[in-house]
Length: 286
Ligand code: ZN
Image 1 (cartoon, rainbow, N blue to C red):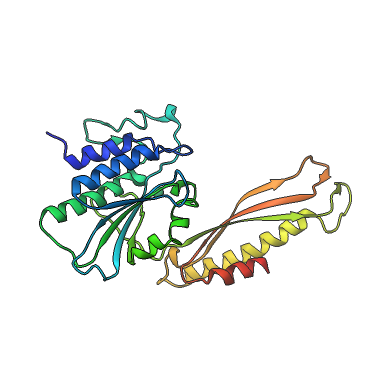
Image 2 (tube, helix red, strand yellow; image 1 turned 135 degrees about the vertical axis):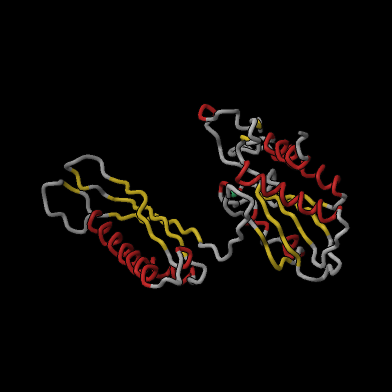
């Protein structure tokens, strides 16, 4: 059976090695430019930071002044350990079941191709949509988007898109259902450095690093308990409605009989969309 053209396109996209830390963005831009030409739609490449291109494809609606819909995906993928792969990670190998192997198949090149394919099918069927649809393909999401989406949203080019609604990355599903999520929690990672008086481990040293670390851990674990109780007490709430706190890294110390000059604690906190992030930060700082 012949392969569906969009599957071929998807495999071509996987073969472009947009892998961190040196993603091949030039080849990627050429590929996306070819797709825009194929769809006969205008596109722009915007570089807020040199070498970090943002690709915008636009399908104008019948009411171009109405707020637009933005379908976003990122072009980069995370690094690979090639030895751990059954098939080379940029080969887009397809086995007899039709399963395709490649870095970025799920996160999130399949989505980028789905966006292109959706526009192609709608356009070819003669549909015209009221709102303008923009497809954005952004760089460096896997390293925080600092030179990509983060700077782009502050530009005139972004404001000119007049976006009313955005669909972005979700999670992979094994069947044909595509769940749509909203109100996702905000990642808030903090490092707390607890300096203190160093000295010999045989004495009662006051004001030491461990006592401060203990204080901070207790405070954050009390907050964690409160949020956990709030979730358990109310069947209406899901995990997405409460703030989670976890201590994920503890660092410090040199040897068993030395009270160190500091400990460092790393917490993974996920804040609900209804929390005021500035107030939350002030609470932590307080
Ligand atoms: Zn992703």
